[in-house]
Length: 268
Image (tube, rainbow, N blue to C red):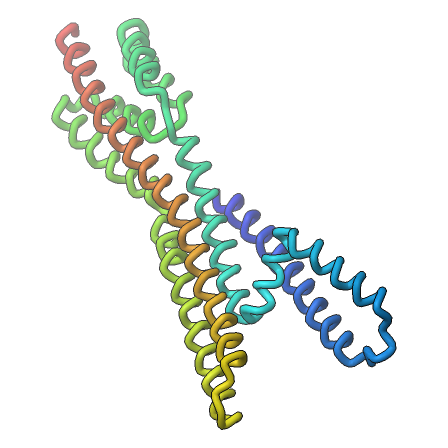
């Protein structure tokens, strides 16, 4: 899972670098175009440019890129970085949790059948061939069956806590990204507002157009941070609900295991 997370993070960073280079190239192109003398432009060229801008405005990718540039490359890059890292963590957790899901009824039936027909060793083999925390808990309980049911119960409870910790691993980092994205957006907004007021102070007069433009650019970072937080929050809630479901199955299966072992000891 660590290799998977590292791979996802590297891919995201490469895409982030490519996007940043594209933004830098766009800014350089815009700067170059502004320095060219536009007095010799014909009416047809102006019409073509307007048509191209109208087509680009309908593209979602073009709109997002435009808003990214207007929001400021520095703070928008940090917000994008939190999105990439957060999604990488979420994807790693979702894959791990789905791999940890076990058909409890089928496992209990196979375990009981193996225990009655082949004994404890056959039941352990069933647990070894089944992936997931429930099978691991069953194996720990079967490994201590000779010490009594009370020892088995304590072992199941203790190892269940270990498995619960493994299921919740990484959720704190996802929660950090959820809280960090809006904070970075708010910071970009505050700094943008400070820049707008500095411009007003330097001009000596309040220009509605300048103030509105500065405020718009400043608020783009806040909107981006909130969108990132909402996206990651959806995945975070999915992971927590999945963990709750697995934990409930672990508790129910542990009770069933103790009942099976009690019956097995009585038969002996």
